[in-house]
Length: 110
Length: 118
Image (cartoon, rainbow over all chains, first blue to last red; front, side):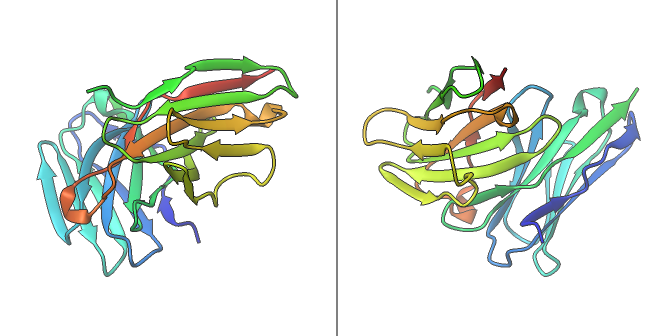
């Protein structure tokens, strides 16, 4: 079992729709969870982090965490073409040990 | 406050040569991570270091690859006798000493080094 699993996509949504990105992790001791966005040919940039069960909202982005199910998600409301990128889920397994999923490629069609 | 600095940004090597990639962490950061990204694939963990100490190198290939983070100077990822399959983007990231959940601290990435083996 991979440490961090994501659907590779591609996920395609129309402009203005909600994009839902999912991630599961294997280490129950994982402490905090991050979503990064990576444009083609660029380095990953942090979008959000979450460490408590429930929802965390920041603008058009909402991160959701369910530790019992070992599940993290990212919702993007009112998707824009500029949101088209690969979204990487990252998990801090403790002691600064960060592991990444393979990423989900999102395409927002105008 | 300079971010994570990687160099070179682009490197071309012939098969059998050595590649050296450098990474200077953000100011105040004590931990360095190296990740490899093959074309159209996700980030693969390679190694995680503190100054003068390799904490976890479970993602490093057993041969030809090595990493160090000396007391002075940048972290270096060294690939000996490169092969075509080593062509990839190599990302370095750094973090502060603590990544406690409530801190919201995370790791920050450099711009990457793109290695092409011809």
